[in-house]
Amino acid sequence: MKTTIDHPAIHHNSRTTVGAIILVLGSLLLIDQLNLSFIPDWLISWPLIFVGIGIYSGIRHNFQNSTWFIFMLLGVVFTLENSDLFVDDVIWPAALIVIGVFIILKRSYDSKHLQQRV
Image (cartoon, rainbow, N blue to C red):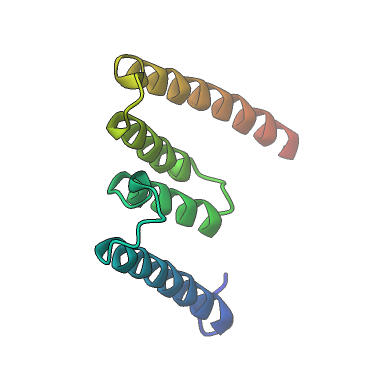
């Protein structure tokens, strides 16, 4: 079992990642407030918090659990819903289809992987 006492780099790496995310987020918000808008409006929006959490969770757990996928999907769905595209009528059914396929494939992969270990 790894602990932060045995491996202090793990704790330091996590703090560095969170600090870098906060630094980038603050910089983007400052640029947006100063109207130096070379950044698209959708890039600084609340749904991208879900995308950021999904990326962070995926990296932290080596994309082994499905939490990263759910956060990423929610972020993408809400970003598309806020956009000017015509996806409002099809985005939620498509998201549910993607979640269903992901759950089915993940279960079949997990059961095959578990049988190979035995």
